[in-house]
Amino acid sequence: MAAIAGRPGFRPHRVVVLALDGLLPFELGIPHRIFGRPKDARRRHLYEVVTCSVRPPGPVVTDADFTIHVSHGPEALATADTVIVPASYELGPVYEEGVLTGELAAALAHLRPGTRLASICTGVYVLAAAGLLDGRPATTHWADAERLQRLFPQVKVDPDVLFIDDGDVLTSAGVAAGLDLCLHMVRRDHGAAVANDVARRTVVPPHRDGGQAQYIERPVPDPQQASTTAARAWALGRLHEPIQLRDMAAQESMSVRTFTRRFREETGVSPGQWLTQQRVERARHLLESTDRSVDQVAHDAGFGTAQSMRQHLQTALGVTPTAYRRTFRAGEGRTPEDLRT
Image: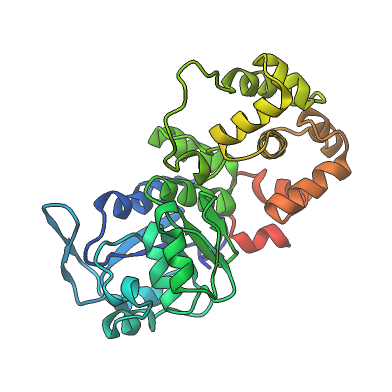
């Protein structure tokens, strides 16, 4: 990984984006927009973003009415700390048969061991065809999930989530989920405060609730049906208090059963899962931005006890509250490995 900001030999973490023919310009631009923003306390860029092709520098066809000129060839992959593969509509045998072209295989041979890999939407087919997802969880656009599973039965496809972080390999659903994924990587590398700043400047939410279930096409609901928005707003205002499902349902004048079904339809998760997500985010914010004790943070985030919060942060982030604060409280960039020290 790249050296850490503030330490001798600092260099930005290099993100190399692999531009394939038929790519979607919007998705190609996501890594540049998200990783191009973060800076450390000395105003140094925490990431360097480079675009490369599987061929020598030159034109790459997009799915729009224009081509782009890429200034780097596949050898740039050998310099990457993170490689991101956006979606393409012209993957050929990769998409049709699940096998790499010779050109693509030769390009991926440049990857160094330990490089973090990520895909946006159908870019996951490239990782799968290279055997990099065998036995691992992965996701893609919900409309492609069934096909991905059929073509690569050794991959554990989850069609319900916006992205999956499996350590050194991350995959996301379609289009805007690429924003979620890249913001998540910034959050994982440098903390919620840095990721939230990038999100604000990009005018997107720093974290979206739920998964893809809320975007799958369904019959149009009765316009007279109420949403669960008021209940979520009510709960966010009192995360530090015990919140019962029946109390949330009462905010919408619904039965618990109806409320639970409607809530999952709208957010993609159960009310309990949503509350835990919000409390984890509140705890992260407090650990980063305040000097409150771990016990006080646990109380203010609604976990009740430090032990309960520790268990939830371990599950969600893989670290203890103390380790998370030690990594991100100073506000300097750290590598993901620092979270586990």
